Length: 374
Image (tube, rainbow, N blue to C red; front, side, top):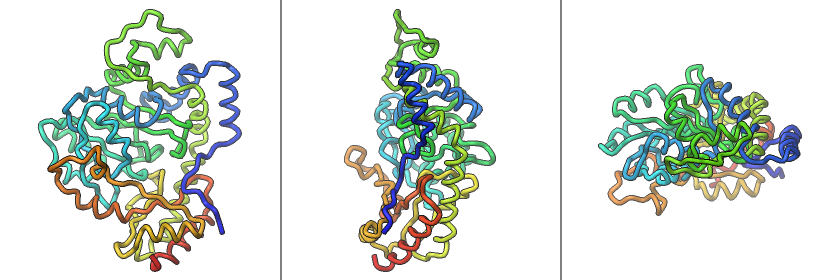
């Protein structure tokens, strides 16, 4: 029986050598390696990228950067990792849970329109499983209501939309580089925007609000006579993390191609399975972080997960809707019927660059064999 991994940090000797080089230099904080990683990412996206300690902190700083304050509302789909909601409340805002589109996994703009109020200041589309939906319509929606857009692109590093990389256009995009994302720096993330005011705010805020401290540290200097104008956080990336990230970015084409190839294999096999529905993703353009299927209502998901586990196939659930979590439950919230129906039917299958096509065939064989037993 195979023992597979649902997800995995995939690193090589090259990343290990890069980390040892940083350790040998004896400077482990935010220094030249972070500066170089930011330059690499800026070249990748074609506009400024700022490295942050993790993806959640990136969302938090982006919200702070656009001026979200206590009582401001941010539209966001409920079907997302809790990080999206936590970032909004950390900035003082109120997450307004919206339904999602089961065809794309992204925010349902028809539902979101019903939830706009005079307190709504921003919309946070979540690029679930690497897909982005119709970004043209989303930006038209934002323009109609004069909203800032912060794309939670944690799942979508490398995904393209109409020939352009996600993050290379639009308002603000936030990425995660945690251990199992499309590229990793161990932890880490980045914010991509060409808004100069937001850039200045987030670069200071990641260094406890100390004015121009990032530039000084990149130059090997310290701020011995600092000034602070706004609330800051210790959200900077370290050189150790950046060393890993730079190698991962250099080798991204391999990771991208492997993830897309595996997703295509899954899709080709499961397209004929009547008890499974797939998201409408074009894996020539989408670089998937996870591969999620929608089970038929007749399938007992818990039972199926247990059966598959005994066959050496781990599975996951991405995610429990945030509006059902105690901290984010709000009295009087309008129902989210699609989210509540579909969230109990979502099942995540193994996906990472060290998985093989033969592994995918084994996983799908086991899945199809046991769907009717669950």
